[in-house]
Amino acid sequence: MKIRQIKNTIPLLIAISLFLVQCKKDESVSSSDKKNNPITDILGSDDKKEEEKKEDERPNVPDVVIPRKDFGYFPWVYKNTDSVSQKNKKEFTGKTLYTILALNRLDKANIGAADTLVVPAKIEEDFLRYSPFPGHVTSLENVKKFVFFSYPIQGFGVYEYGNLIKWGPTSMGKKATPTKKGLMFANWKKEVAISTVSDEWKLRWNVNVANFDGIGWHQYAMPGYPASHSCLRMLEEDAKWMYTWVDTWILNKGGQTARAKGTPLIVYGDYPWGKRRPWKKLLDSPEANNISEDEMNKIIEPQLAEIMKEQENRDVVIQQVEQEKKAKADSLLANKNQEATTIN
Image (cartoon, rainbow, N blue to C red; front, side, top):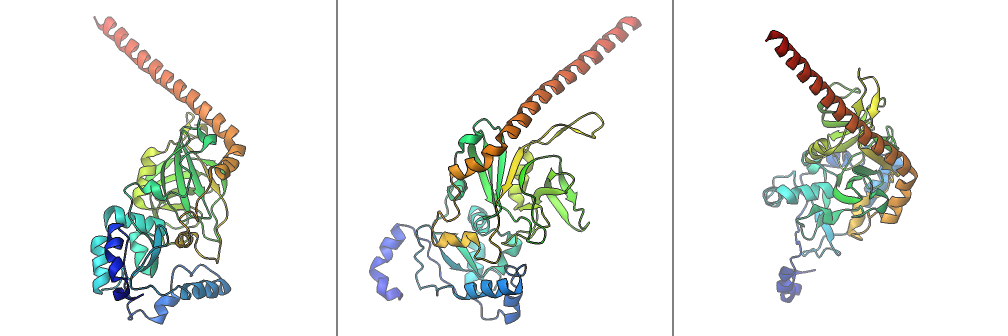
């Protein structure tokens, strides 16, 4: 498409606020850089060839990009020093940058490895507008807090009483070290935990969800694909928010056994290894990654009895703990009063 051919349509395009960007990939990128693309470095040789072939089949970006519905191709050269890249770095900050990173399952440190990103035509103020998870799940209406992790789309949804209050991207276990699936509960948390795999790995805002397996959600590198050693990685702002929101276990005296469990979560589904990354399908349809309420209900309902049992037990334990604290305080006060009477 030539600019002069759409001269008469430019005012209309501006009026409806389409996100129009066109830039060229820096010619200085070497073939070795392409071979070291972290998007394909976890795939087998045959899968790599197929993935690289698909990347090469991207259509040429026209002079004016008209996104399909809500999303469009965006040739990304953020790591380069050309004028377009520098302009991107200045303009794509704050909520805009977070949205772009989250939709592409990347963090800022890894954004330079991507040459094409999915970018909304318009950055919405409410990030929940981009959620692939349903806004309400009836099976969770009596559940105080719940987290759902989807392996296929590498995303998590946070619910309170059945209502979605937050969602975000995740990088779960790679093919060789998959994340444990099924129902789990939050155990302990620590602002900075040291990984049991390597003491060089510092896990910020870590919330353990499988104590004996050493699995937790926390901040760590988000390279745009499942890359962890079974943990559930998050962007730092998400991990920090989740750290303050989550309920952890309550231990018995001595700290050897759990008296009550923490926030429930379910990890579900299978990642399409070697195939097109699911979020790139947003280019074809904004609903490509959506999970329906019916699907969520079918996944949750078999686990609902255990979730409610643990929630009710937690409520009882919390009441017991409050009563124990009050009894202890009353006992201390009575002892002080007795001591004061004896002295007088």
